[in-house]
Length: 494
Image (cartoon, rainbow, N blue to C red; front, side):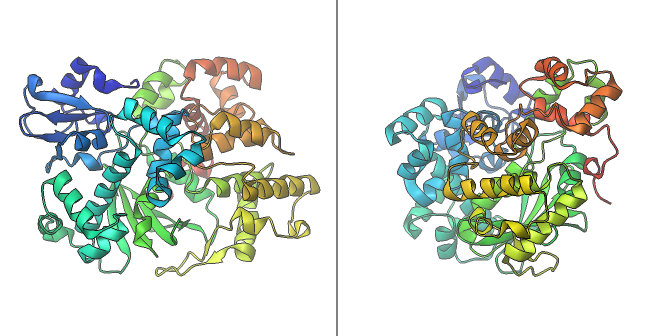
């Protein structure tokens, strides 16, 4: 897969004619005769090639005057893998837009986060996506509106403002333009079997992904390292609290054969798109597993591991600062000890929340809240206390930025300059918080043990040299190597 696939007409036509779901989200097919746009896997009879034109985003299709197909619902296809595997300006901008920055702060706010002028950002996004940041954010609002219309019984006026529209008229006009149906007509099409959940503020959603997806290490890792009060595994689902821009939430995520079942309870429905974006990012749902696994299979040592359990994802996080704090707490201690340290912080400094189902009690404390604690209360060696207090202070004052729009190389350099931060801590944060798909952990004990058992070089330098062939997917190679061990992180809880 490469940047700008929509320009490869022959390849796009083949994907549409074969209804290849792997390409959903990579490009969109707009049909000139019907003025409708579809995902490549649309179940209807494919149009004639001469009637197809291709766009890189749903926003570009909408801006060109095409309406979303009512059969394949292209606006709900998995996101492009590009935005989570790249670190350039456009990818960083797309991650920030998905996190709601344009809706909250406008394009000037997006530009300020990225350190570029609004004109530069608009020019680069339009060149690659065929649409500027406002159009991309508008497409996201339309998708959020559809979700709320179809999964809740909320009045349309409440949905309009929850989805981020400035007025009911704009909401009505956008829904009609994008879906060729009024909001009430969209709701009328929902089958009775999919009636909205009765609990106020609770939504039931299906999060799509590209197959295959192996849930074992993904949910196993999240469950095995879960911090009591913030996270839990219950009834076949991973549950956790969420700190969001307008309030807080509780999410339940359960693996299914063709989707992730998501149940969200939000204190403010305006947080819906951000909550979905963060959950998708945590579960690495926009990855392209076929491209990853094909690359790793070229190594004869990794090939049997991939063939045995293809589709492993990198377990990430919904809160980058939280993960960095937990990474420091986990330095040179067991998983159980790291959970104990984190649970103490949560009890002492976390913000209490009400969980209707019980079990979850707090939001993980913010860096600002942790920066005020007395270091002597931390049950850890003095040097690690210094590491901890320096990190939370620099996260609180913005010296270190781990947000979705951060520059990976700049952030790595900032982290390496902190006391007590070596390559392992920096790379595990890069892999699971920043989302770098090529982060590698050659000094990790589990990786070195797996390398030795598989006949790979076991010294960090030699293993790093061998792993050059796995680029740019070394973070996924880490998951396959870890999975050779019997640690609970590698198994779906029962």
